[in-house]
Amino acid sequence: MGTKIVLKKDIDTLGKAGALVEVAPGYARNYLIPQGLAVKATAGIIKQAEQRLAKQREIVAQQRQEALLVKKTLEDHGHYVVYAQVGENDQLFGTITNQDVAEVIATQTGTTVDRREITIEGDVKTTGVYTAKVRIYSDVIATIRLQVTPAG
Image (cartoon, rainbow, N blue to C red; front, side):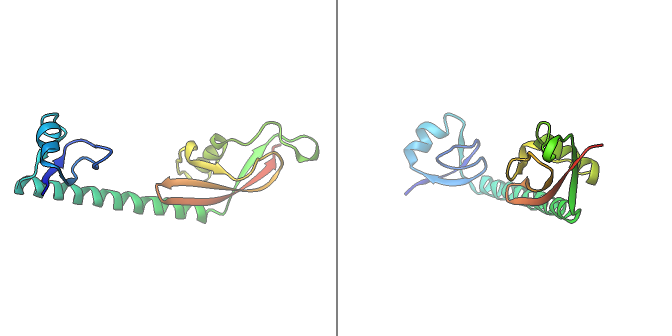
């Protein structure tokens, strides 16, 4: 029979802060509670933990809904035009970076995206149409088309 505790801090092997877990009585009594990592679960503490988790679920659901709206905005825009300097045979001078894509998205839709969450499929070395994926939320990814055209 284990002891029920509520975690005060994230513990890799047990769970996130606020989680109600059951552990061996000695582990709780000798390590988790004295180190301030957990508190013994009472009716009041369990109720507080459940309320906190419900609030976190609401926040996550709201953030996901907002991410879905951003995804719809990005994908409904159609294609994004990126202007670049080109040489012979439509070869680019340099390359199109994630920062370039993020700036184009911001100017054309007014939506700010993190450049680190953009993945361009293939190397952009010539003019043409390319596909990029933008991670907006953990499980919400928008797929956009980039039209690379000569500048000037």
